[in-house]
Amino acid sequence: MQRMHLRLTATLAAAMSVLVVLLTASAFAQSTLSGVYKVDGKAAALTQVAAYAGEPESGQPTTVLVFSAKNQGKDAKAAFDALFGKFGDALVVKVLPDGKVYSVDLVHSSLNSPSGSAQVFGVAKINDFKSGGGEISGELTSGGPHDLRDQKWEVDLTFKTKAP
Image (tube, rainbow, N blue to C red):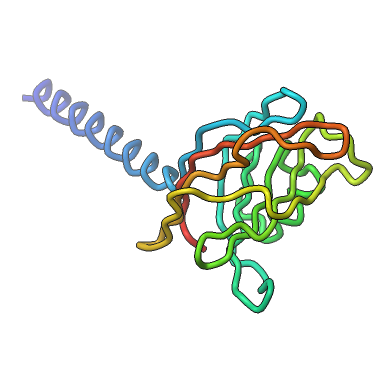
């Protein structure tokens, strides 16, 4: 009887462990990110994307997407901190409600910039933009390589993340 009780307890403990792992994984599976971000042919290893409510631009509300190589955690100033390399290579993208990209700040270890970042306008767009049901998704693309001073950069990232 005692052996049967131990077997049931061990089985129950194993089942509970699997359940806890699955619940924890789903809680952290709030975002997905794949694709490429390069400066001078050197790819950044972006692993994170998060959306934040941004300041209005041109009289419209914005969402700020922060793509980064390091975990942003619960940093209340993630967009600002990303510009100064806190999260490694990064992109800070201001998006208008219709999915139009207002601006992109590039942060990359290969970028020749005194400030460590560079802002570009009118180059990137988001294809298949979706915002609803608590999520934002799409494909951020530069449509191929572009010149930035004496360097080439490009982005083509497919993403999904929790809306701010």
